[in-house]
Length: 354
Image 1: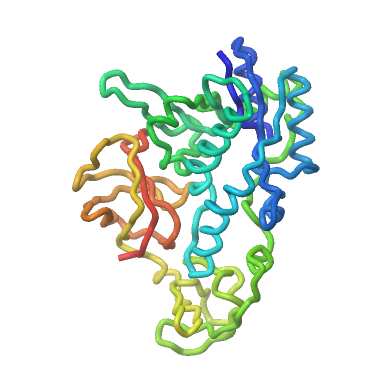
Image 2: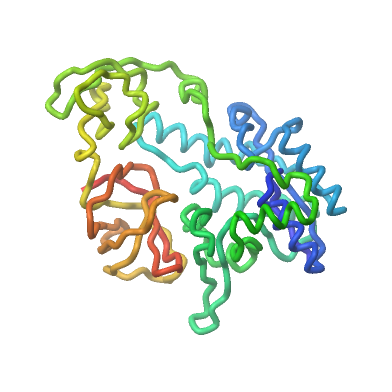
């Protein structure tokens, strides 16, 4: 089978490529290039590359070892329009978007393989190094997305918006492997990036630099409106944040809200970061053609947390989600993803807490 593997220059995609090659497939590796304008500032992340980045050089070494073709595919215009512009707009409105949730269905599993095909790269399936499982269930006639067996590295949270067409044409070779398995496989097979450190952050600098804007100072207030200090731009904060508030107080302070009209940052105790539920919009479903109007499921509002039980009621394209126990730091703009045990049902974008 001809397979296009999305390669990042890191160990996960390198091992995925090696596994597919060892299975007898004819593989071609490609990397997304978003080196254009503001996208230049994202090149520290191994998901994205510039022409001269270390990630490209590592990817070339991997492909040289595998004796496979390597291509750098320019998706910078589409990334700026479909991901970065939304990311910036959300942050400037004191919301906390998840760039990977935006990028995956639109760019990484959308524009990227489409452009590869348009460039004449022959492939039957697209593959990535995500830790997730994908299979066809003949009983229900659908592709199912499941969590990785590696709970600590499971990336299903970021992929809930993939549709049936994408899942039908995608392979995830690492779904049954742990991170230790991947590292050991890389060392045993002398893969050049076997010991390369994982990339963690989408962007680690100041958002005012990233967004080409100035930090506009405003008041930090408690929930009663008492002024406690000065902030340096609301876009630098998110719900539940503790670090960076820079206010001396008798107890730790956490971000609990924003007053956009008066440019105020609202802080309080950790207890006030908890919510009993949320409203979600932009709903996307993998498991159901027509979502139920109400159901009980497990859910996550952050990729790294343990799933919690919730009750969901859907009306007019919005999901009202009530938690079985209060959850900390429900951040508008982030994703909520629903599960039935290991199966990803779907998810949506958090609009507000309850």
